[in-house]
Image 1 (cartoon, rainbow, N blue to C red):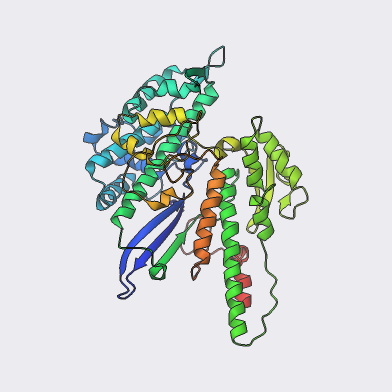
Image 2: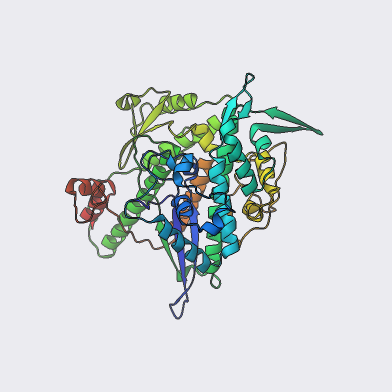
Length: 492
């Protein structure tokens, strides 16, 4: 659908143990799709809020955000996919609803204005381009000059161009300024945009949690948790993001099957009935293929990221070599690819070919913000940009530098989980990749789910055309098989 989940959400509802009335709630998020901020697949949109901003922001406020007479067609990331509108949806009306919702969660007009300025700044920043000079040093292209000037003004970072195009290396008391290539400068540009959008999202969740806050939440017996997480994904081109999403589905599928079969076994035993033998698709080996040390796919990716000479080609070759005979790996020739270009995993829901399509896997996995750029944002003259730096994870270290935590919006315990920050607010020196943080967050979530009494709602897609009253029997049956629903039904 047009509002498909771009992040995992776990909502905990808290109830008074005596009266049974709801007394509070907490939202926890997992794995926001950061690459969508800078790259969008054909036929899809970037985040709806950008289009809503451009269609719905009143004329009086558009000047402050530098978007007078601007539409989605004027920005690369919003028009690169060829899809700027959604049939039957008014972005202007949606923007009004969004503003009302923000106000209901204590985010007033002044803070909203700061939010829109940051989002406009990100749009202008992602339109900035670089070329290499004769020495392969990044130079700002002429058409990008007004874009970088506007981004600098809206984000409050006067030294942005210098920081994007140079690396600053500290050696003792000396600072060496190394020019970057156009490719490296572009990577810095995208890293800043993804970082700020991610932090803005988490800051927003903090305000929502503050508005939903209730009394002490330590009594787990009064809590109901609702998990809404991304479903299995298989596109024409699949990258690291799809692998992580499908890995989470493999883990949750294993949890579902284990829960159902364990519960039924206990019921049979309590009633003195022989437990039947039911063959079902055990996906434990597929989970280990992805995350088990030392040669799981994500482990090999982390190793490649930590290797100075690591490349995407070597990573893909390593995966295919290490798992050539694995029962859940298919030869890449079935996808008409080379072992240096892709690998194919046979998931419980079908085979998926993973390849490099939205950028380097090593860069996506090591999606941290260089400390030079973090320091640039720390010095921003925009108050909200400063507030977004409260959480110093996702920041690459430089010569032992440790960015200090800064006060931001209302605190949220959620966002501190899985962070590379020690108890005293100093950054840990350990490697902490996107995939490792995702695996850690997912493991923590599953520990909580295992400690609870779980119930399951299986969502089945009736057709692929987004139309009502249209039921594709073959498509539905395939989903029921993949989800293990038929196996569970046979047992029950």
